[in-house]
Structures are given as structure tokens and as C-alpha cells.
Length: 93
Image (cartoon, rainbow, N blue to C red):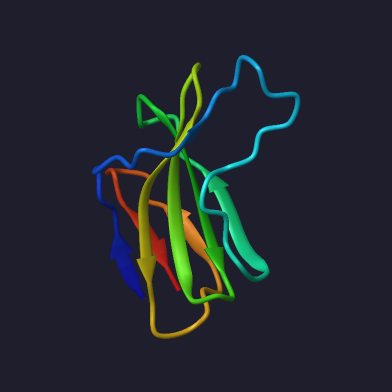
């Protein structure tokens, strides 16, 4: 199990005002095993995705776009992920 989060922003984003479909930057390269939006206890909207490519990614969803905030390579495929109900953390299994 891993606890992962890094608030460092990346330069890639998708503009939501002009997109008919929203594509997240740096999408997983293999099947996605979990996909969760942040809880209401967090003021911003975030999306986490765990994948069989042995990675977990966190995107921030804003009015102007989607920004990759963190990407972490793990030692094994991600089976599940969830947001902590009481803090700004995610749990990855």
C-alpha cells in the first residue's frame, strides 16, 4: 500500500472551454484499474487513476483545463485506489 501526492504542477493541460471531449494529459499506457474523483472535503476537484502499467496519476480539474499534478511509478500494477476521507491523501493497493 502506498500513500502518494505531490502538488507540483506540470506544463501540460487541456482547455475545458473548447473541448467536446476531455482528454487528460499523460494518460496511462495500459488498462485502468481504478478511477476516482476527490471527496467533497477537498476544495479543488482532483481525479486519480491507477493502472496495470504500474503507475498512479493525479489530475486537477479546473474551469480552464485538466492538469497532471503527480505521476508515480510503482513496483506492481495498481489494483485499487481511493481518497482519504479526512485528509489530502490517496491510498493505493
